[in-house]
Length: 117
Image (tube, rainbow, N blue to C red; front, side):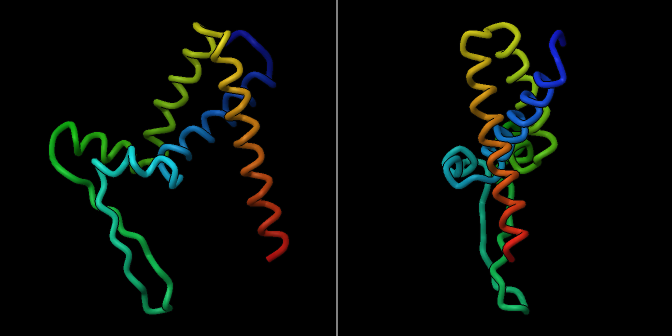
């Protein structure tokens, strides 16, 4: 990768944010719904726990497994962002920058929440 440490940092934060968006965020639940079945149960401590079951077989199960694994999805998100950034910089750079800023903002928010708890 030609570029600087800042480019690596930006793409890393962007990959983190895109991966988290696909695997965990509610806004992309519609994307995971055909592949996952979620059930919520209350544990002995009275806390809600969400359990995930992969739907189907074959390609449906493959995508279900992929979308339930932060590490697996992260590899594909990283490849997508790197290709966009390298091959289509006119829209790849702004996309990576927006995701990186959002990723850093999320990390900072989580750190602040830990400090005030």
